[in-house]
Image 1 (cartoon, rainbow, N blue to C red):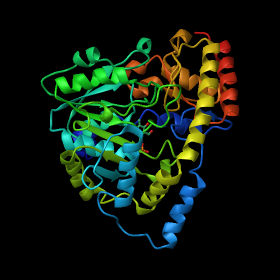
Image 2: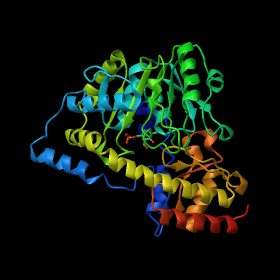
Image 3: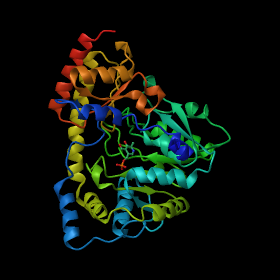
Image 4: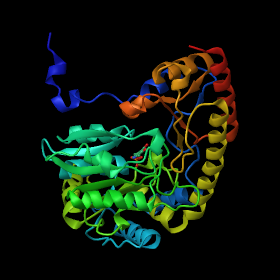
Length: 391
Ligand code: PLP
């Protein structure tokens, strides 16, 4: 019999399927499940954004766009960067519209990593980072972060993993799965580190708009000397509740953006025109709707943080994204046992922390992109679970 597995590319064989999906598949077969597992907004895309797409279709916008995306959209993205972070990008040469941040991540890795190049990736992190680096032929180097430091990364931790092959660093703050953010001072230290070792920095800021509390989000490329060496990634999925539209973008120096565009041109050709039209509307008139959703996430954030604190599970107050990452080691269960037993006995779905890297092992990721009522019910069920399951 043919060994088909041996016919698959070694880099594909080297990556594991996402650890998130397994639990969704089990949950999908059960009734009365409350899911804190999914990393996507529970809101529908605001009407004016949907309407703009419908209107675009009525007008006959059904064709390919420029590879880099509609110029109007790139101009709106440039205006946004200027307005929010006082960073200037040339819409003609320094912005590429992609099929979600997912595509932008893949393009960034493929554009810069040669076989054997290493890329530093602080963990716990979004499940695609390691896989994209491996598929691009690079070597992802995990750099663990710690609960005691609220999962922020430090230059010393990065330096400990630096080799002569280190070419790049990938940071993602606000962070999925921990909800951690990094302030200006901490990011400036990372910027100095990048400058010192001449690293390219991929900065995934998809949750940038979802930052709570007094400190505003700091865009990495807006830090001194970082514009040139940063590939800034952002998109519409989370802030504008547009996960299904598949639209994101990359900003960076023209050499890197042209390299990414070359790959994009031969693989995607362009992002969907319908989603691009909707994204223009989101940037022109969607901010007020986005801010409303963010205010609601903020309310849920404080509620769930209170809830877990009262249950005695150690966690820090998340300041960004829509996740909380409690430490469940006091229960005596591994994160996988905890998630599985909680699902089967109390019908609450969440994601074991090790799906996001080894150092997430003692944690579970809970998304609060769901209603307060459901969060309250999930917390009550978790309380019940903790009472009945002593190891
Ligand atoms: N980056 C992070 C940190 C994410 O959490 C996600 C989705 O969960 C993505 C990127 C992918 O986003 P998109 O829908 O734009 O492809």
